[in-house]
Image (cartoon, rainbow, N blue to C red; front, side):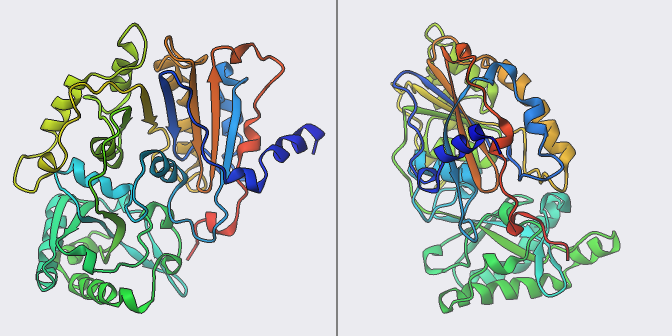
Length: 417
């Protein structure tokens, strides 16, 4: 290892990795979050980052690196970033914010119907997306367990095949550890489930749900087609509070959770993706501002105006709202496992430079911005890079993407049953 590499690592000691995220500059600021962009060192896809790192960003400042060394991480690094910057309560989950997009108001618990695969001596959570559960089958499974929920005054809403919500007196229902399914896919579920006395009522209810579905016609039909059974539900987390809205921040992204989070905590653009960010960048001669009219229209039309719906619980941002900060969550690496699917992981990096170019950030900040932050996330690591107007002239400074790769601890590798 060279002296230069040793110096770089000294800059990011364990104590330094726990400091707060760097604050954006005082002017209009843009932050691009890239969940899933980092992988573990030694994996076949490790070289993709260096191969596709954009030339215009080769002199960026690495302003922070943060690692999670806990045995079982409670949330993904980008979820922790959003929690820290939006002020989410400690007990609320990012994924549960999709309830707002689906027209529900808190308190709710987000559930995902899943298949638990039997390994040698443990149960392994499989990826819910390939289960190809239809909305009709999802509703049939939900209807079968409603009598169990009615006994505890709980309600069950099926918004999409994989987005279910438990409502009612959920504060009286202590749950197992509410850690998102994305962290547990391919792994033994034991590390993610609580076995204490407080969660016994929920575990009893979950066991009854599993028994009800064991010989359900939906699962019988899936077995005939050679498809895995839907044999449990996973607790993604809960949403309990209506927080103060951050009218100074525009939040955009393609997932239901991010769009719900934007309507709940920040200002949501009329177009939740890159197009909405372009409108924000284009206003006031290139300075970052959002259209309050578009925001109000989007918020008002997002959910049905029924009693108890999200439209009543979350009023649109004030007409005077003009956010001077924007956060865009990239969807280039959607739930990609670099080990299981290195081609998809590499495709995300292949699209990274064109994505920056589309946003006008290929060589640094767009007109009207002093700097752009790119925050790369892995399973346990977060690396924050900043590109300012003068950064491109720092020819003596060059980033080395290989230094950002995570170590490959056993917990980061899927288990083979």
